[in-house]
Image (cartoon, rainbow, N blue to C red; front, side):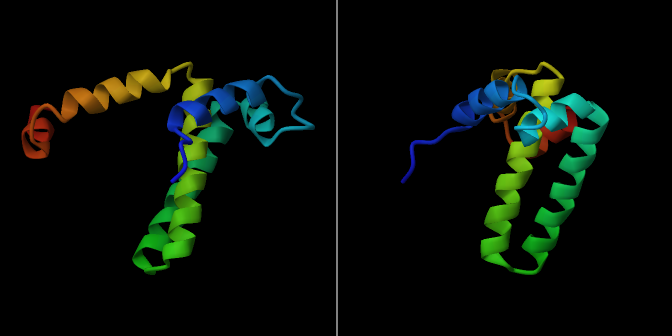
Amino acid sequence: MSNFSLSDLEAIVATRAKASPDESWTAKLVAHGQAKAAKKLGEEAVETVIAAISNDRANLVAESADLIYHLMVVLKIADIPLQDVMSELERRTSQSGLQEKASR
């Protein structure tokens, strides 16, 4: 099993965001702004759903990777550290999902 983590991905996205848009897809997304990056995130979410309901395991894995990557780009553009998201997940898991949803 790989030791690759979301923190590793966050660091890679941060580094590639500083590159030339001619050399990096990440930099190109960042240069085009949040609207473009969020649109791409939405496209990947739809493709992930399609793979899930099609029971296409290999494609679900690939689309999930695309989805997570594009989410990391959107978070980078918004200047939201992954730790903020992880802290929110930790807060939510301190109670049942039904209790957490009712509290919103």
